[in-house]
Amino acid sequence: MGPRLIRAFVRALLAVFYRRLDVAGLEHVPARGPLIVAGNHQNGLIDPMLLLAALPRPLRPLAKSGLFRHPIIAPFLRLARALPVYRRQDADGDMTGNALTFRAVSDALGSGEAILIFPEGVSQPEPTLMTLRTGAARLLLEAEARGSAPVTLLPVGLVLDDPGRFRSGHALVLIGAPVETADCVALHWRDSGAAVRALTDRLTAALRRQIIEAEDRETLRLLRLIERVWHEETGLRPNPRSAVWVQRASRAYRWLRSSAPAEVEHFRREVEEYELELQRLRVTPETLGRAYGPTIVLRYAAREIVPVLLGLPLALLGLVLHALPYQLVRLGLRLARPDPDVEATYKLAGGVLIYPLAWALEAWLVARLVGPWAAVALLLALAPAGFLALAWQRRVQAVAREATALAHFLGRRGLHARLLARRRALAEELERLAARVPPPVLAGETT
Image 1 (cartoon, rainbow, N blue to C red):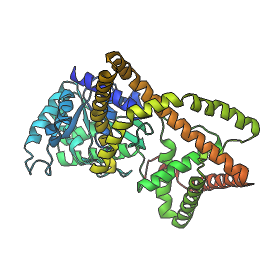
Image 2: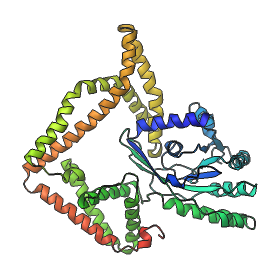
Image 3: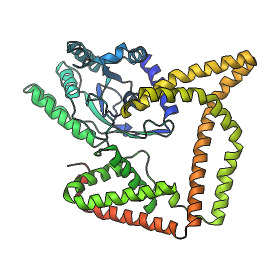
Image 4: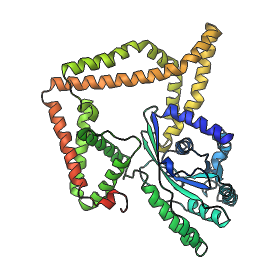
């Protein structure tokens, strides 16, 4: 009952927080049998929540022992039947509790359950895979040594876009094919250390094929921009359930940085200058690709501006009703100054605590001033008014961008054509550079 309740709760929270959550590779998840799910870790407590919500099987997470003493998080961990991991820095050097955890994991796997682990050991915001610890390999090998049925080791990549921005972020869960373990299990009987190292290396390679690695967040942001440029130039629609394009571009970039550093650096500067010009003009790659004839402009105005005007009263109601909790969460973040990898966790936790309290206060005030039926009406209006206000804000921002772009293009002759030509040149240069990269590198078969 507990894991199902947690999964339903987590799914509801993520559906509210993220604009969309896409999952690819569900066919790799075995319907039954012992399973270890190993994922990359860049986004605090949001990462396990994403996997609990995305995978069709109940997962028992491994979590830092200190979290089991947290007054807010601990109850949820117990409902999820999580298991503690004792780290040297968290347990005053006392690691004896891990023996009990290993035994509990072996028992769970022996019963055909699924375990969730983040083998990097810690969360960090940079788009790179840190050196994996050996825990996942040791758990699998020891479980099978104790007589468990063959354990499936499943690499899962988390690809996040604006993970800390409410209703703007996009999460992609990429489930890879199971890691081959039979030879490592056989080796474990003769040389346990070699088996652990071999399986950890194999898991590292499998995870790298499922994620997007870049040298830093700025490079990843530029890769996402050039992806949008390429899609607009070619007319091909991006697949939200795939990260293949950016994965291949990132591998090509790393390979070319060593084989053709001057050309890559020149191309990067061109992309950065192009981005700065678009930002200055408040134009996006998608906006640039649109035509701006009189008929098209009139149709756009009727389709977008009229709903903005009609939705203004309800949008204002939603903004007023949610102004207090929004500002309180914002103040809390400013005071806490969380690291980038836990920003989304703080926002989500703050929202879960503060928004219901603020709604209760508002309902109480309305009940005292107007009456109980008015308070009931307020509570029923809170959720739809809030989502309508968010949708209205996004539409207003889109209309403002389009209007700004139109003003620039009408006021500066040749600007639109020049930007399109520059976009085309970037796409052509991208294709020329990519053609020099060996196919095995692009496919992630080598580095």
